[in-house]
Length: 184
Image (cartoon, rainbow, N blue to C red; front, side, top):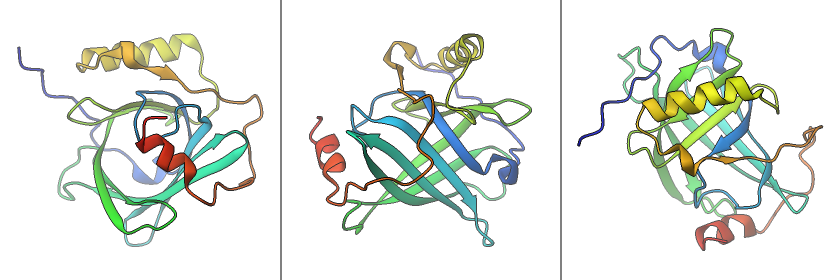
């Protein structure tokens, strides 16, 4: 049976979407360390309409991060279908990797969001706060399930009571990225 086409948000206010988002849960991926904590994304809208993306996670007290950009997949559409581009490896960024970033749901106050992509291999539940109440979390999980995601793959991301505000010591060798590619 073919999966239904995913519904995405229409009329996303990109300016309101900017800022910091905490990863509450996600499908594990080879692009993130398995034992990462306090994972977050910070989005900044540039004058040219491109979004600067900073993804951060902490592993063993060290900050791993990767920077990239995001842009509307179809500038003429009102659908919240974006493309994200990162260059890897982070310690020698030479290879572009482009992926889909679809906003499947966002609340009216832009406080929590459900992000996916057409293959349904990746899924994120994001929040402006480092914690999310169970009722809201379960509502987003149900929405993901309605969109054809296997929600049994969701993994809650550990978030500290006081998330790091400073950059902290960096993983300057990109070890987290190499380990993640190797599945560790």
